[in-house]
Image 1 (cartoon, rainbow, N blue to C red):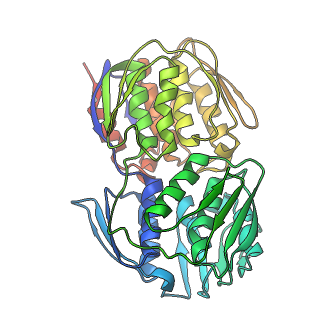
Image 2 (image 1 turned 180 degrees about the vertical axis):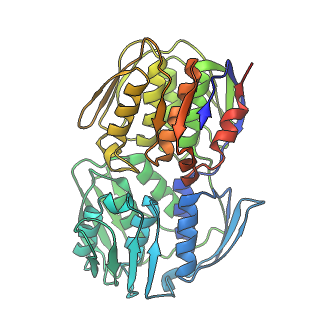
Image 3 (image 1 turned 45 degrees about the horizontal axis):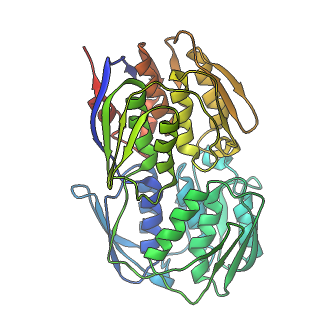
Length: 424
């Protein structure tokens, strides 16, 4: 896809529902007693994989494209009713990790697998944690990676989890633990990454009737005498990670941009992105259900952005338009995402003329004196495609290879991006 350079950015954007919240909500509703109406549901590749898996496992649901709603008929502790099957989950990490944990409770003989990249993403820390809880699971090919076979057995108890790779491992254990036969105590080894995503999980579980005790992100305690209960209606916040691209566009070349669907009371950690943009010099204001950004002179930052790994990628692009050298630290977990994002970002940033230093867990970016017109490889990674669309704001056109990979989380991204681009 060729993106020409607009002379100005301005407009309003209604954001789609959050992928992270949508996939959590779908599974929590399936585990609940009662029917749940989920509103503002995102319909993307990752969500379709989750819906398909739930259908195979016996969950009945009615999805409305017109209303972006989904009625889920929960099975409570009876989930899943269907057994002896294979779930193909593409590269949907949230779906893979959470379903593996939940399906480790009952005897069901389910194989969980994914696409080539998903089979390269590490699963061993979650696997080892489930084994501690007596789960009967085994690798079917390479140790530490998908595909795996699960056949129940998980009883909870004391579990030690390495938290340094992905918060999704903890999220998966938290979601499964209320239905284990023992109370569960999860002890975190190392520093837990992406804590805001764990906060999302705990807050959502509370909305579905489950209380989790969190002791300074070192120990988590979940009682097994709790049941997921449908909240009847659950509204899914718009995606704060997706907001980052439009806010950054305004900071680089605005005009005023307003994003609707997420605001100052968001449960998502990526709401912090707006505060970082403000630190870089942009004019930001937070409202109840919207964020407003206006252009201003941008300056570099040096920050630990471990807690917002997705939105931190947008900061890396914004840094190209800021005065000074920007350093983004403590982002090793970029390497185990849809691609090795640390290496991919460094490689593609160099193409457009930036001077980049790639460390094991950091990225240092010196803006280019002149932007180079380039073809950007997206590595089949939706966030790289969306991030590098912002290079078109530099005054040069940019070409994105395989731009369709945005379908993973934001199928309408480019139509919304073009809606705020003003061309001569």
